[in-house]
Length: 299
Image 1 (cartoon, rainbow, N blue to C red):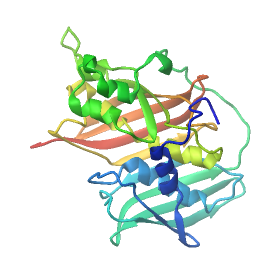
Image 2 (image 1 turned 60 degrees about the vertical axis):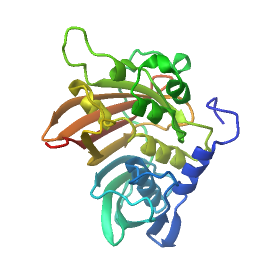
Image 3 (image 1 turned 135 degrees about the horizontal axis):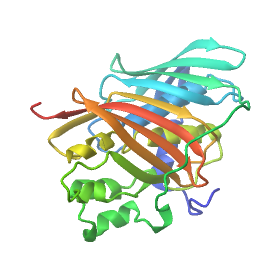
Image 4 (image 1 turned 30 degrees about the horizontal axis):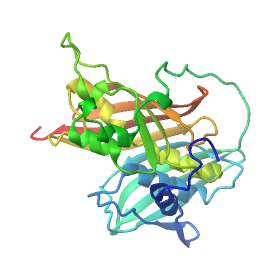
């Protein structure tokens, strides 16, 4: 166990671990369940994580996943299980490749290709972690929701205050409550600390799957910062379109990780966002890129 928590596992974390424990239907065929959240569609990070679990169960333990490239094609139905069909593309001496298709009601809702590599050493470099406030002095989600002093819109406060398997502590609250005095659009940059809401088992593959789940949280929203809007705005139709994730180093998701996000471009009703995920020691453990729909209603 890490210092994330020494308490019993929260219900939300236990539920996440349960939905990541896929049922094997056949050699390369798996079935995943959805949490009972009342959502209108399945959370994209859940599908990414479950697909990663399905593929990983067909790969030897000595070669962890290092990259994932995915497309979301249809909204997932939270009332129906998801079937994951794994295709064994390549089994090489150093690399293994898998393709996964997620199916509901006879249609593909998601597809991804995942690459695995035997662990080996080599050249190393990385950027410095952003110099931001640490997680210990920041308000957690429940405190944000309970505090009327933040001035955050109700929908935003409710999002951060909701019980979930991933705890979020945003560094940049001004993103939701302030505008620059000179009238210039805010920079499309957002930093948030995250971790599992309670300690996880030690299985490295589970930590990668939970990180995949968390990597879809808050990222698309960054592309709306310069436009004084957010995915919580009822006038915005927002949805993830694709998702790419690279694992650089082993990671524990039950200790704090900094998710440093930015959006270099938007256009065509789509926003592009990037993320770098650092552990508390400043090691870059993963990188993320995503393009999503950010369509103004009536646009």
